[in-house]
Image 1: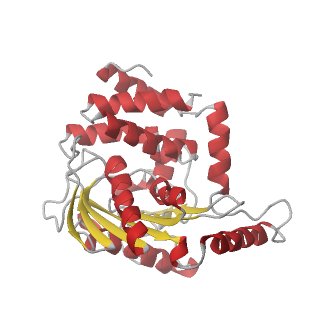
Image 2 (image 1 turned 30 degrees about the vertical axis):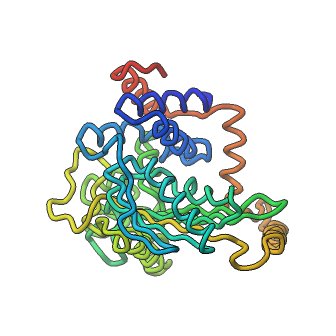
Length: 354
């Protein structure tokens, strides 16, 4: 177990070693560790060395100059200057919130960025301003659309946060695939098989081998197969891809650059970097703040009180992550042995002790 502040300090120091200004290193570390706190271990410090390798490959600019390249009163397109997505994304969400303060809603698409951690962190920024927050990003093409043998989409997550009054906020944060690639990486580290419906092999047959992607296989859209609604997951992933990249001028579909540094980006790009999309909506743009929050409380309370299957209870999106955050802030964050080894080796390279 590692205390949150230990991993936060380690991550911040590594980011400073690769050239991030102090404020960016602090922000990037906070975004990355938010994943570990919320139990999304696949997107936390386990990915730190991956970001470093992208920097070493010249694909991440540690000191980017974010700029708005197009805007209207309620919208903007942001060029992330090849920056660390952990830093570019919250800055872009801040722009969306500033526009929402003036216009009621704000919408920002981003190009020329990189992997931005968990979508939920950026969406939840709106809660501090009594705003609904929305965050999406496209990602490396690892997903085969329904009936496809080609990998054309990423796991393309969607996050939505909605404030309440006395009840905790509603926070949905999910990939548009049956499982995110990070879940496969965890299974690989634990030498476990994947459930059916997560992946297919190169011939299009469902597989339980978590290493299938290395042999030409693909992740499956949410639903797993046509009979269980994978065409709907495919639609959701496509919407995220279009909002994130066609809106902004980032790469989309099979042209999105890979997260791993040992694979080169496509030689025929259709845009710049990875794309994100953010939205912020003032709740008083729709109805009085107190009235809105009161009805969100009522919505949440009613769903919590639903008659449940024996031995289970009906949860509100965000419940498991909030409970996990409280537990890990108190007891510490566990690291799998391969992740701990990787971080210690990374620290040794840069003279930063874990």
